[in-house]
Length: 382
Image 1 (cartoon, rainbow, N blue to C red):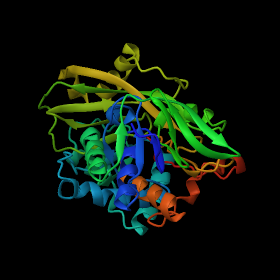
Image 2 (image 1 turned 180 degrees about the vertical axis):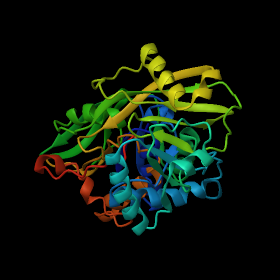
Image 3 (image 1 turned 135 degrees about the vertical axis):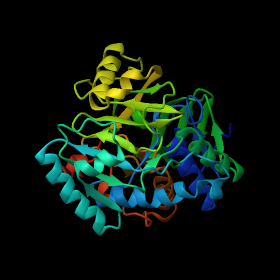
Image 4 (image 1 turned 60 degrees about the horizontal axis):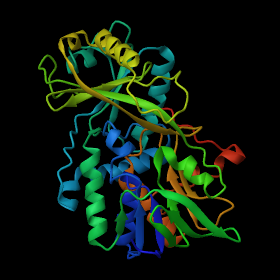
C-alpha cells in the first residue's frame, strides 16, 4: 500500500469507487481507496438495486437523471452488464394526503422532464392484476425507473479506476485521521499511516464513526433494513414494475425468476445490528401476502440485513466539513446512494478538482446545513 496520496477515499462501495474513477478520469490518479472489507461488500451489496427519477427535490432529480444516463449505457461505457431492468417504479397511494402530495410532486417532476404520470386504480389493475387494491386510491408510474445489480456496477467503477492508476486497498480499516493546525495531514490504518491533504469519507452508515476520528460530527446514523428473495415462481409475471406500498414502505420487484422484497421498520432504533429478525420477516411476509395474496404460494429462499445511512432530512451530506480543512464527506444517502452513484462520483470529483460541483448544484446538501437549520427534506423515501 502506498504511503502518500493526493486523495484518500474511505469506503469502496458505489460512492467511493465512483469518486475514485471520476477523479482518475480528470487526471487525478494519485488516489488511494481504503476499504475495511472488500469492494462493494458493504451497504452497496445489501441494496435492492433500485434506480428511479421519482424524487421530490430538484437536486435529487438532477442527480438521478444524470446517473440514469450512465446506467442505461453502462455496458457500452464500462464493458459490464449490470442487468438493468427498466420496468418502472409503481407507487401505491392509500390516503388522500398521499394522493395530493404525490400529485403536486408529479407536476414538479414533469416540469423537470421526468416521464412520470399519475394513474388510477383501473390502470394499476391492468398493469399488476395480482394486487389487492381495496384501499388504494391511485398511484404514480415512471417507466424510466427500474433496478440493476449493485455489485457488478461497483466493480465496473472499481476496475476502471484501477486501470487508470487508482489503488484500492481492501481489508484495510481506518483507525485514525491526522490533522495539524485544523487541516488534514494523514490517515492511520491497520497497515500503517498514509500522508495526504484530502480525505473523502464515503463510508456509508459508518460515516459518523469515521468523523469522530477527526473530532467532527457527521449526522449520519445506521438503521437496519432487511431484504428477502423468494424461490422462483410464476404466479406473477416477471415483467411487472418495482412496486412500493408507500404507506407501509413495502416494496418488491422481480429477481431471478422470483421476487426480492422488504419493508422498513419505522419503530426500530438506530444500531449496527445486521442480524435477520425472524419476527420482522414474518410481519413483512404477512404484509406482502395481504397486498398480493398469490405470494402465499412462494417460498422465501434467503434473507439478509444491511443498513440505510439516514440523515435528519433523508438527504446525503456532500461537501467540505467545517473545522477541518481537507476533510470531505459523501455519505448519508438514506436509501438512494446506489442509484445516484454515477452523479455523486462526478460531482465530488468536480468539488475536489475545481472547488465546486458544476454538473449538479449540490450546495443544498452541504454537511454544515444542519447547524444552520437549513434542511432539504426529501419526501419520496422508501
